[in-house]
Length: 353
Image (cartoon, rainbow, N blue to C red; front, side):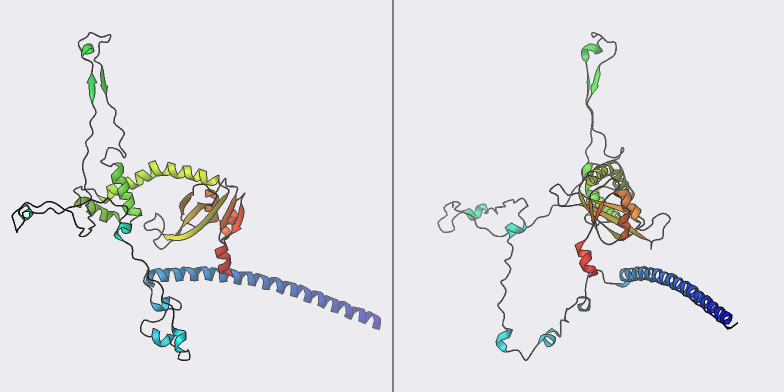
């Protein structure tokens, strides 16, 4: 009877231990899932904080000018002497060898790419007579005075193109083997854009001013008016878009194909803000991707690509067919690019350390 009671008690204890193990396993799984949720929340908060910091800097941060507090180690202009002094140092230790002054560039170096026109200031005819004896004086030399940089503003001109027509007078009189008059015309090159006044020089200047000098189209519209040409900003925009689609796109696609044939590439992406993008708010973040060939002795190819998102599928689509080495930062989206050997960037590696 006692042995039976001990067996029952032992079984109850074993059941209790089994239940405790089950509860511990459930608690462990619950803790693991909670940690996963916390990690996801933390990562999400980090992304949100990064966006808040970025937008705060864009709205309220300085654009280019930096105050002393913005620059680590930079002292205030007025208390620099007090902050830097050290009375314990002997006087001779404070003496430093003066650094050699940088040689000032000459005018010949500053303007070496410009055409030089020599202007000789003529002497008046009445001054060519000797004031002492009245004898006509002879030129004995010249003396350098100064150098001036002269700017000649651009000008607009209209070129009207005509084709020439030639007809055979013999056939016209019916003396030839044909009953119709024989007429031949010269052939004009097709217009750059439609039937408008756009020429290669005007379109090239518009694109250069817009993207190299950062001059908005509404300001270019005023410049063209000053030159005597009333060209609207809408027309300028049409020139840019048409040229991009019909002339630059085939060239871009060619370099894209050549880039995919290289053995080593580098890639990176950065945030950009696009205004008035269909279906998206002005605060939405888009991305500009950069793809560059390595130093392999061949001509460098550097291409940009715009996408509304940072999805790694964008990089995979752009690099579809590439089978070499790809150097990037730590962004995991590049793992979607198949068939490559991915390399880490040393600069980002040091940054993480």
